Length: 98
Length: 487
Image (tube, rainbow over all chains, first blue to last red):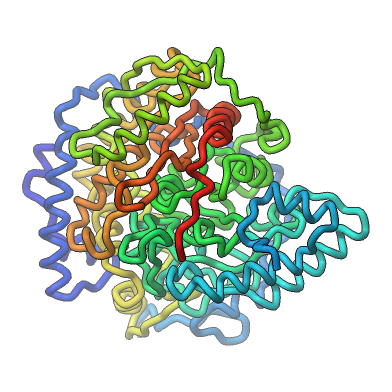
């Protein structure tokens, strides 16, 4: 993992993950996650050049269904969960500046 | 009332069928047990008293009308990450505040069809991330055997409520040991089915390639009855397997002979630092299986020691993607911002607990450009090696015997400051999730301090019948599962 040796910048990755961290959290997680990353470096011991990766333990491929209209969730039930809604639609802050 | 809450599914089903009690009586008795005990245990997040009694009345009515169903009138508790229509589904997280499930998870629909009474929802580590139920934002759960100790996790509420006779059985989910480890810590039986056996539709996803729903119960027989109800193909989950489900409960034989059965003992599972009392209890259990006629063979699972590293890369990677949906837009908590980006960052900061934040950040990192090959892809390759280990081992044996955890339940707060230390305890359970096969945990002894010890029986993919047979034979010829905590 030569490319990983520089380590993780927790503040930057938290920004990518859309989680605002406090300074205290950033410092705490930096130490804890550095430890975890150091621990997982043991995987470098193994020669896995010819090994196929496993994404799913039980191989299932191309599960298709007929393109038929089924029953969907009730619109009112779904909208009732929205933190803010108007006229059956979810309200969000303004996305595009004028 | 004749202590109906202390009985098993099998015992209650007989009594109900014989007209010796009604489901309403059973539910009232269990509710009374919750009222006396849950102040000490803290298993429940919400108890649906009125709904449970209505369901019980309906079950009694159905029975009078001649209906016969596998769980008719049996009260079951639900881990709070399964959607139950019209009820909250908190995942023990603040971010799902105010959320009401608009549909039933497939396993919930199956429980209803089988006649079960849904009692309420029980505590867990937030989004199933943890091994002690201490990462729960909405409540604290204690081990019924000693309230200073953890119940295990993440299905800690499920295991604790069953062990404390606050439910007849419960549903949990197992991503890296989250059914088996709390079952071992609390002294009940827990089954992690083969990946694909049980539909995950309506289970709040943590790591989709590892998650499986399964039963926690008082006996192996009860687990088999419940498992039979839960399994089956579902078009709503494309990873669920389209194959026949054996009649796990009905076919379970009371024959206690294990003659002709080869049981493997993996040397790698007796790890350094293992509590000597755990090792002794498990080795005694192995000896007991031998006395029942099984042949014990040594097997090797040489890549087991890499399982934790592989697991914490793959599970966090999948979690970082799965938990992207909790963004404050469509449901749950929202902390407003002047634009969506600000809203996401603030909402997720306020809604997620520390462990969830750590895992989402780690998962985002191992999937990020430049690090994907070094971490995620390499972990997936080592996952193949771990899976191959099991394939080789099952050429030599029918099932594998092992400990579930290196130690009995530890004290509350003992490991909360050191995430890596907590992760390392999953060494004996995570390989099974990575390989996708099945395993169960059942009681096989107690520590000198009176805490339960679990025996893990690991089966090949789709070999649930084999591990249930071994577990049932062991259980019928031992008394561990009959001991109850002194609450």
